[in-house]
Image (cartoon, rainbow, N blue to C red; front, top):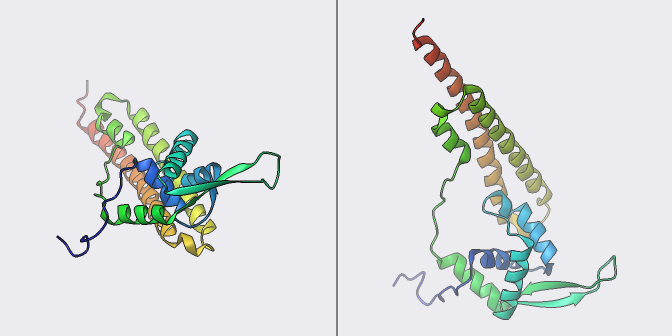
Length: 202
């Protein structure tokens, strides 16, 4: 057995959403379901996925049932309804640490809608292909700006040093996607010019 994994606890079974929610609690703060959703939108949503409120609340209940989190009701600063906040337990912290260290790492799977449309470009009008690529460029730039803003907003929080690196990765990824869309638009333009030259005159 590898020395690094010898004696390591087998990561207990949770769905990916459960590990994500437990990971958000691992930063040591008490978080409500709303807080978990807000933080997942700001970070996980840029590179993995952002769970729905229903998924988050279901996982928080699961984590509490398994002993990985505890909860309590607190009086809100505004309004009249108490809110439930959750905190990770020592057992939960050990579990998510074991999972992060030893769970198999799934390679990223590229499921790229604009690339699929480009692959089927022979079935589309050139203007429609340009429209798709331009739309993707705009999306990538929007996501890049969002990641850039989240990097800046988290700069003062030392607890978010590694998530900030992940946000920087996301910023660089969407920069590359934007630039690739520009390159593909130029390539489509060049391809259409070439086809025009080769088209027989009637």
